Image (cartoon, rainbow, N blue to C red; front, side, top):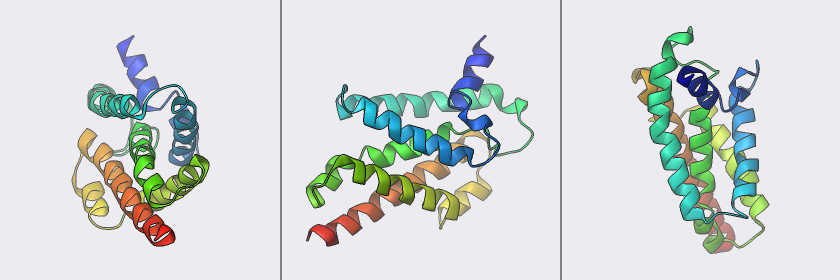
Length: 161
């Protein structure tokens, strides 16, 4: 039973089982989920939920890792969820730099996160190639989220300044 739950969890309710662009779909649905949650839950609570998802992801990935045939299976998209949500959680920073509608922040966050997750500039590429298991799977997307936050903050600073 827990194995099935873990598989459902790390594939983000089977979005990871989509044959093409599963990470992009996971990021997109994470943006939609964020837009829904932000209307009902304080951003600090969403941050704590993301932290819990991040922590539980290590357990879930380690418990189900043998099911998959590759070292970084495309079916595991919970890392995209955590990285994309991290980028979205910086919206209060973006709002101070350049006030606009929240939907614009979500769109730019989505595209920047996907850019860095696919492109994998240093040190993301190093982490992706050299760290194995749950840590390698999760950390490269967290770094892509940090790159996205930094890039978007710089862009909005110059737009707003």
